[in-house]
Amino acid sequence: MSTTSITLLDQLCRGSTPEAWQRLVDIYSPILLRYAVSRGVHRDAAADLIQDVFVVLVEKLPTFEYQQGGGFRRWLFTILLNKWRDRARAAARVPVVSVGNHLPEPPANDDSADTLGEAEYRQQVVALAVDLMKSEFEPATWKACWEHGVLGRPAAEVAAELGVTVNAVYLSTSRVLRRLRGSLRGLLD
Image (cartoon, rainbow, N blue to C red):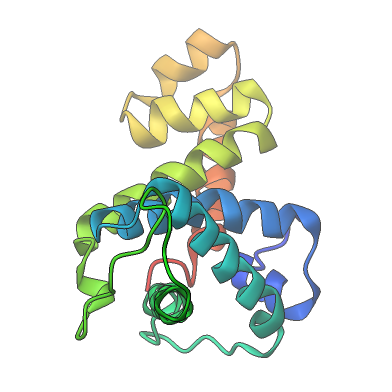
């Protein structure tokens, strides 16, 4: 990921990199899987649906315009439901011999954005993004941010433990959190 404050969605809309796509897949695959499985879709069928969602994203993201409160997550769930309906319609036309991998009918009226509670959704996205970002920083930089910015330990105590200045702890915390906020902008609608 670049060191600028460009968000993941901006990167994907403007000409994506393999790293940006991988980050999107890593963040949203578990969320989409959980949503589909919670709706009664078998895990194998859900994995296929998620692949279908990302195929649509490859095509549609270059023209996607994020609007504050516009609902990227709602859009993803809508794509997933549409693909689910497409597969259910196709399966209805073909006689089913095997019962192991069928799709239940999607709900008629589904308010997708409310399925995962807002707090739970935010927690999942942030946790996944934090895990992915950990490798982008030197271990001492990450530890300074984690210990001071997340766990709330005094900067002087963290600085002494890491053998750096107090200012270095503040700078590390600021740098990591700024990058994290930039990465999450638009994903937490």
